Length: 349
Image 1: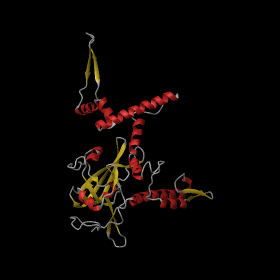
Image 2: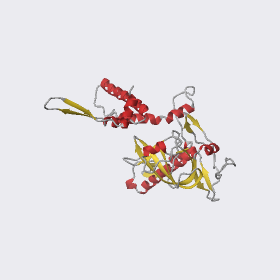
Image 3: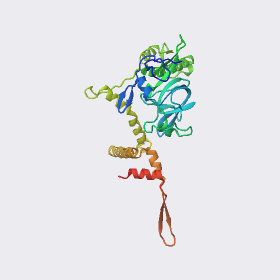
Image 4: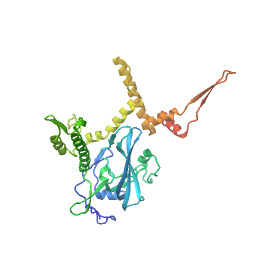
């Protein structure tokens, strides 16, 4: 049995032991909010114990979404079947090249990890059922069950090596520390492998040259170990101008800036710039940013991406037919489907 504390005796599901304190915070309605275990137990639609069987990241309209498959071993509240799938923003992909995007405060999952999850239905549709297995990943994000309270609603089950007792751990920053430690261990192992094969040594983290030989940079390793799980935000603003909460909230919106830059570089083709005069270059950038403002307006009005809007509007084409006898020109337009009509109606001022 998994033991947990801080739970009401009237709870209808097993009690489990929390190892440590709850540190994670989540962004809710523009503010950081802590949620206790008792509150999560009341708010959760489903509480499940299971094994992370598989996770898969995929590109969806210039961002990454990850689908996590959980093999259920026990339900403490509600029921969704023997296997459930969760979809959340962020994750890792390997194609066309390895890259990772992580939403600050979102839970991270590892294959083979045993977890306890407090889940809630999508807030925009509390009555929605879990997405069908064949649904597209972008649709899953809007209809998938979500972890309540972001990282606060995910507990990792670990076995005490001394007693053999299972403990559910949710330590916030220590979860980040575990991730950082794994990444650091991978870099150290890579450095050791390169040192063992001097002919293949290239510039790598944790490798230094001393006495004309490659060695492990132990001082850097010790320094980085002290910083594991620690994250800070640096700003040139005075505390009287912006408090800590405001700085963190603005950092959570950083992805919007990155998304805007990706639109300007891809859809709006702000580069390469073939002009040479300063005034013409500035005009080119100005036009692209004016187009970006229009794109963001269209996205807000239609709740669709710029790429999708362009694709829909380009589907409406005209055909010009010339009557060679009478010289009359006839223009035929493709009939707009319901989705195109919806976009056009919403964009009408």
